[in-house]
Image 1: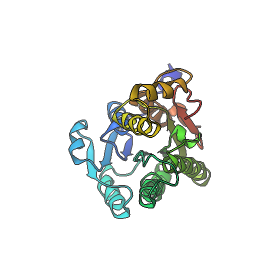
Image 2 (image 1 turned 90 degrees about the horizontal axis):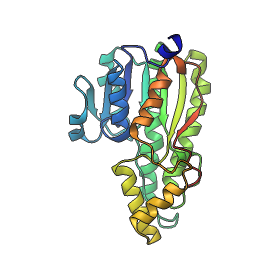
Image 3 (image 1 turned 30 degrees about the horizontal axis):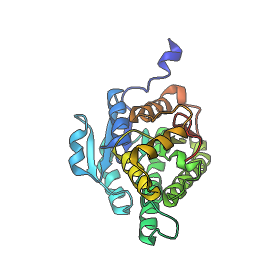
Image 4 (image 1 turned 90 degrees about the vertical axis):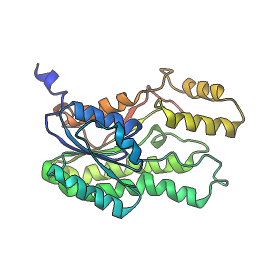
Length: 257
């Protein structure tokens, strides 16, 4: 029974999730809420706030804007501190050869996927020291593999892994754990858009591109948003209390991109 109990987060955790009203973020939000946590989220999609469980706090925020992140933390201060921060916000970025990608598109990808995580971590660090809490940074299997025609995205996600490992070293002496989750091909509208764009770039059909992607996964399947949420819950549970500085792939074993 003691082992089983160690897999369940304690009741009343104070949790902040960025981009928590859609996709993976929404699955994580719902999972923590169902586990008895008090949750506050941000998202740029105000209408998506309607997806949130009753009682979950919401702030409209673009994490690439420092002022928005500061306003988010002010709004989340009603939780009375933070035990878990999930740095989930990110964008797919442009698809194209490196000589075709516009500098503005490159900068936007880095601003959201990397700088946004820094802005959140900067304000979260002190609160997590107080609680000896957990920071989860959302990376990607593109943060451990090369990804042709998606260089801004891959570069940003490799950087997130470096950020994670560095913060784990920096904050660990204060009892703070920092880990990255590396999702693989996650079922949903976002990956559908990526497949469409890569198929167009390759001048092949959607179905052929999808099958090519699945052939690079040893389990030949996409993962579900709930798979990512389950990993986040485990990291926040007592059983995850000695896990830090790790880049944890939840991907059905993606072998190449």
